[in-house]
Length: 522
Image 1 (cartoon, helix red, strand yellow):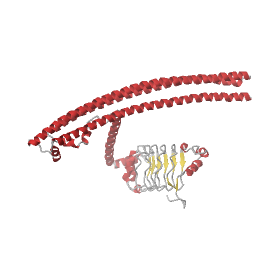
Image 2 (cartoon, helix red, strand yellow):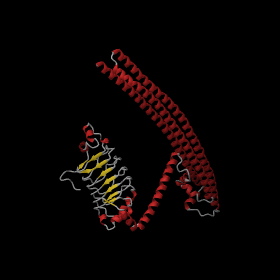
Image 3 (spheres, helix red, strand yellow):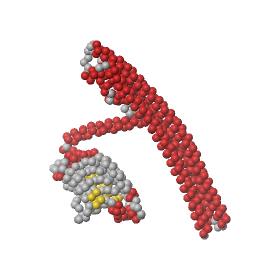
Image 4 (cartoon, helix red, strand yellow):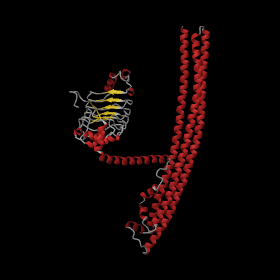
């Protein structure tokens, strides 16, 4: 679309938004909002900004609950500024100057998208729109028919418009689209009949079979990757990720330059293999221990959460019963006060009513105090239990990591022994193996060789110590964070409940004061 006459292109600003919301007042009650001081943009559900000569999309972030947005018939060149509109369902960007589809990654709720009459040449970057049902791309510059295949990922897509694109002029256009998008109901505003779908499928059957096979392989691969990611997250939650195999062992040698050289020495290969097997077994034991302890911590947390919820629900039910009983009596008391003909009787009934409000307040506060004390005991018990579980897990970790260090120390002794034997053979000229030059450089003298073996040993111990420290630090941090959150949640709950009780009692007292004034005036 070209510019509207000689009007300068505009950017969406606060004045434009307030004016638009005010003009659309009858819809979604936006007009009433606009008349207030400070328009509540967050309450607007529909916004119409068409024919405004808008060049750039901006300042829409306050419309966090917006469902429908019209930006058609402007001069917009780039899709941007929509990141916060996560509840958007309907978006019209037709009749603009947009060249590329972009900036839609946060609009997962979008169902209807119109990009009609723009300058788009490629269909892509729509992956996030998992609920997309209607897509209008007519009158653009899309020329590649195979680009339609990209739309197969949108299982809910039922309406598609591509008329007015170069692609729509191709002889096989309709059959191709119907074949590769079999769930489509409308193409270019016309319903697709079953006969056309059948013909299209037969015509492109061979290519479709190949495509479906690739899609199935890709889906299986994605499912496997997702399963691995979920499994890794479970292992991280247990603080034992990458301990169910040789990862820690291999990481010790990944940065061990001297160790790689020493592995070439006669007999060291067998030593390494034995060391590796035993080391991995200890890691697997640590891994299984971590998973079991995680299940115990989870069970303890579930039991605690259930106890807290049951205590709160029971307490709330007692509070509701007291309030219901109070309100039943209170309504009768209010009627009696209104019917009182003498001042003495009025004052007596008002005093009695205020006493009942105070009694209710005290009763509800007593219930809350009892609940707070009960939850405090429950939290304290949980703290002890979870601390014991964490402590037991840490002890197991330290014990198993000590086994890893013992294995490393034993291997170090054997490796040093093998290295000294090789040195002695080298000095005597009895070494049959032909060693690489960088390995031979270690055999200049005994100190050089011992230092190389020691450096390799230090690297390995550092890796083991680092992994132990990382695990212990994480599990203690998790425990601290969990307990802090539980205490914060309880403080918030208690304050909220006390405020509710006070507001209820204050309302009842205010009601009595108002009634007293009215009766005295009469």
